[in-house]
Amino acid sequence: MPVYAISDLHGYPFEKFKKLLKKADFSSEDYLFVLGDVIDRGIDGITYLKWLMVQPNAELILGNHEAMMLSCDFLFDEVSEESIARLTSTKFKLLETWKENGAEKTLEGLSAVRASERKYILEYLREAPLYESFDIEDKHFILTHSGLGNYSEEKRLSDYSVEDLLWNRPKITDKYKDGTITVFGHTPTFTYGNEYNGRMVKTDTWINIDVGVGWGYSPLLLRLDDLKEFYSD
Picture 1 (spheres, helix red, strand yellow):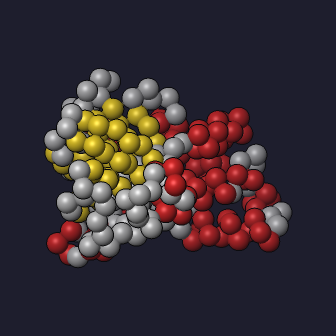
Picture 2: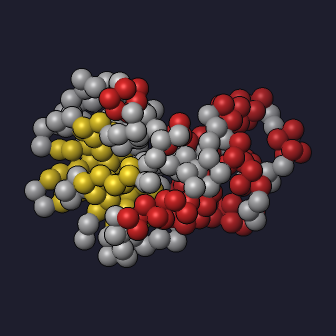
């Protein structure tokens, strides 16, 4: 069963995403990990969440944008200009932080969804894991949204904080555990240098697959079994 990973889709057109899966011959016998941040900036974030909620062979690992959405769960009962106007100062700050990070399109999508469906989306996000760890043949993988902040080889995965797993910005020189491939997104790869524009960054111990979809680059779908890369046309 081939296993795939993709990250930071940020509302990328959903039909193009499905074409990318088809390009990789992704089937019901395969498995897909989405390493967070399907929402915000683009128009189809809520479409991704609704799709993921019913896929038996796809799993969302929580990203910082989904975490910001959860911090604004007070909006889920009603998303309107009136509900936003009634916000307390604390809630207003949470909402402003989310909006500063591209929430407008997601809020528009939420306003078009029934209250009962928003409730199910919220429950789904609350249950989303912060990491996964598994073996594929002779390779051991750790999947998170942003790598492993404050890394220590002595730490268990459960010892890492939410901040470590959702907001970390690894340096190109950072090194994780030998014999393990840690796969993550969050930090657009072009920030490591022009040679990585629209392409993944691979070191001895980690792979960053956030190739900058939120900035106009085409997403990368990575098959973990053989580390083959598939890019959207």
